Length: 234
Image 1 (cartoon, rainbow, N blue to C red):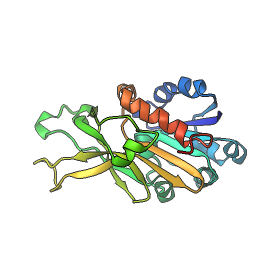
Image 2: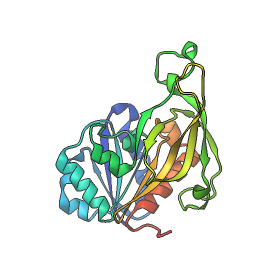
Image 3: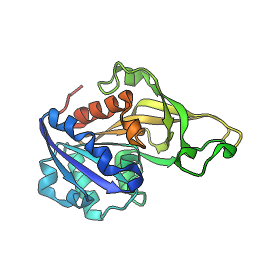
Image 4: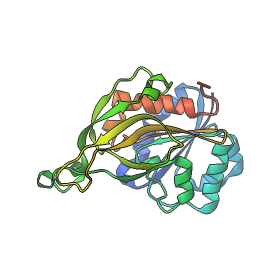
């Protein structure tokens, strides 16, 4: 079907190696020749990027060199698909405005539990919330047939522009311990056309159990196939 490049690294809390490994069999089963890189330096390799049909990125925070980002942007503009989940794509390279423009959305926060219920660990930010499929999402190949689903994990608050096509959302309610005064709806799954390339971002995916959720996994896997240069034209 094509060539896939898996790029992983950054903050270890999102377990980039283990998380990406869970998707390698899927890519192989769908005919991809898979190459794995532990560094974004590969983005600066023009020959590799030119023959890559799909990039799956799992690099939370970290930084990226100018030539690496230029290589990534050029590849996507030329038709290479770009996808990932959670902080591995929506919270990468915080210091790079050009990366933010490419992806179209940036993690801002994940609201926490009531202060008196916090234990001082990552579960302080695990909230039960709904991922709601939009009208567009009900018709899109990535999310068609999926119903709204509930997760108990980090609920991403995302800053975004209107060049994204939102397939699913999540709404942050008003709570007495938070400073906002009306519910905030953030995109939870979106696509973006950039030049000839397709981008798919899925914000759930903090931990391996979330990635194993059937709805989350379906979105990510379908997103890989749709984003690929060799994917569906729908």
